[in-house]
Length: 130
Image (tube, rainbow, N blue to C red):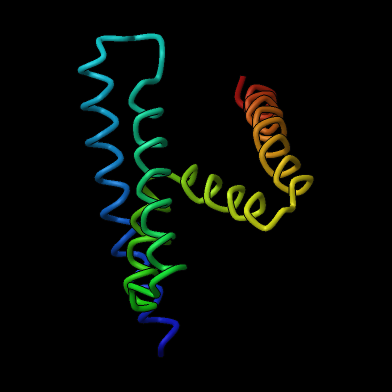
């Protein structure tokens, strides 16, 4: 039963984060006036990283939040607001642990392979529906 409750907590956080992402990203993009550069996405990614950094510090150094609160905020809300914050936090943790090679592989690999996967997905979709 705990798993079901935890999933519900994460889901509620995810719903909240997704709605916030839509609202914040849209507002920033609208205020930027740009129709070319994705300022809204950049804003939510950077806000998410800053919030993840602050909260993960409080969790690591002060054990501030309950497990349920961590699930709601860190996994659900921030996970849906931006997975980039999780990526940033995990890469930072590798750097902090002195695992420079793994941090570089994680950062470079996810960006590089991610771009390849976007290209591959588009190529597959074009092959099927194009």
